Image 1 (tube, rainbow, N blue to C red):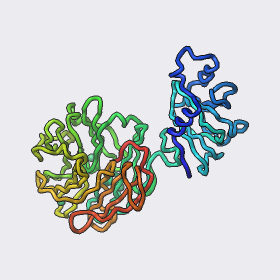
Image 2 (cartoon, helix red, strand yellow):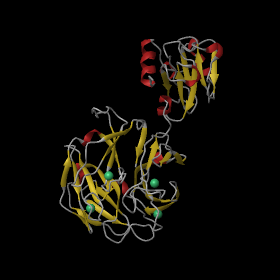
Image 3 (cartoon, rainbow, N blue to C red):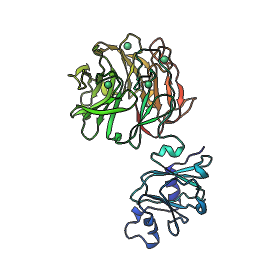
Image 4 (cartoon, rainbow, N blue to C red):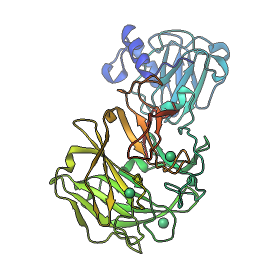
Length: 407
Ligand SMILES: [Ca+2]
Ligand SMILES: [Ca+2]
Ligand SMILES: [Ca+2]
Ligand SMILES: [Ca+2]
């Protein structure tokens, strides 16, 4: 399977000397006016390089193109979706697939630069043009530890939430499937975290920060993988904090706590969970220097003393440090290892391998390279050891690119 994304479309358009209506402006020559004939809500194509003459249009998937087979030379996508232009008929993947971004206003058009398109599919996110589901896949088995860690649906198996670029939220139970649990709007949040029960009903919840207001919201977990109604737990000001991390219980009262780094001071604060949802008065955990960390991970209990531990990644070095949880504090840090800057994000998956030791999963960024794979969008699982640290990672899935976060 080869995939050619929009970059290639743009390149081809440049090579052909094509331009956009936006550049041409209102005074464009009449010969260039044809792209405006494409109605709102439609994907359109022409047999000419400059979008003139007879026009093809569709607002639904087109597995075959009839007389238009291998005829597209310029296109305009006025749908709200990505248009996947398949060289294969029936939306196949043996040939190239071009992806054309949504442009409802119809201000852009360009040419595939070839006449090989034989089917068209309209999808919500660009990754779907690559033949992927809107959500990534992964597999997990039952954990040996009780209670299970990172378990929204209570089946003793870790699960993951993924946000796609359209702002939808997907629940991934660890069997390769994905369930839509948020139909949209989640891109309004610029921090998402979970792990532990904040509402006091024994079900894991999600905490989210609203970018535009700095408000902190608690989304109560339903116990099935979805989240229910939200409760305001921070009325504002949370944009002054970094690395919001639901951590498990550090205070020892059996309730989950939230960690955050204050941007202006580099202090690490603990916000204790309470019986009813709102967070209690914050406590200072670290007096400074925490701005040096660009990831905090509440991933469970690594040293098996019954207290949740914290991992932090040092931005300048890529080192991962373990801060053992103590009652109401974190202990002296222990170096886990280096090289972790090739990760775009981390996932706390509890004891993924079922051997009793807490493991860690990570999604790679473009700098990742190993004998298992390279580039962004790989999910790598690192098995915990009897002594603090992880074994060499194992590639779990290659389907994690083109998303907008996972937690
Ligand atoms: Ca689960
Ligand atoms: Ca709850
Ligand atoms: Ca511990
Ligand atoms: Ca394990």
